[in-house]
Image (cartoon, rainbow, N blue to C red):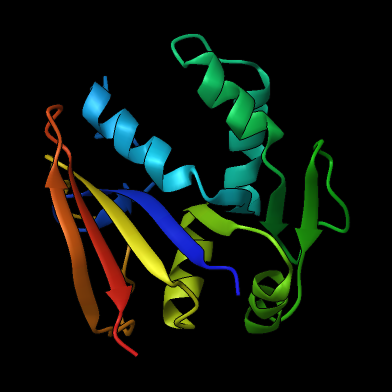
Amino acid sequence: MRRLILQVQTTADGYMAGADGEMDWLTFPWTDDIQTYITGLTRPVDCIVLGRRLAEGFIPHWASRPAGESQEAIDWMNDTPKVVISDSLAESPWENTVVAGGDLVETVAKLKAQPGGDMIVYGGGTLVSSLIAADLLDDLHLFVNPTAIGSGMPVFPGGAYRRLRLVDAQPFDCGIAMLHFEPKR
């Protein structure tokens, strides 16, 4: 069975975005050690899972072949098939992307049952919160930025009590620390 992995940037106080979706707290530029870690994390991945709102910016951003990104990263982001979880889209307006809607638990179960490698979720916030609340993630890779913002969109929304097992923790030269958790089930 395929694994569903979360990779999310977070603040030190647990937010993945500001109250109005701000991401100005992200630490850049990244250093070679974090790039190497992410390359290893994505090596077994052959499907990117996104929420609709994130997909609207994420997919066109990578399709524009952004300056400052390696050709390898651009090719991987564009060539890897994507699934957008949405009940408001009937079909995908993007290349190499399908839309999946309906019951989230059933949708994820179908995706996990398909042949292939791991799947990675980059967000957005509503999807991440729903996946956490439904206990559908197999691995959580939290990239904790050295910034606290005081309020915003939490990675773990209220009522999302979860026991986690720390698998790994690693600081990177740019100041970000990665915490790798698995749910205790």
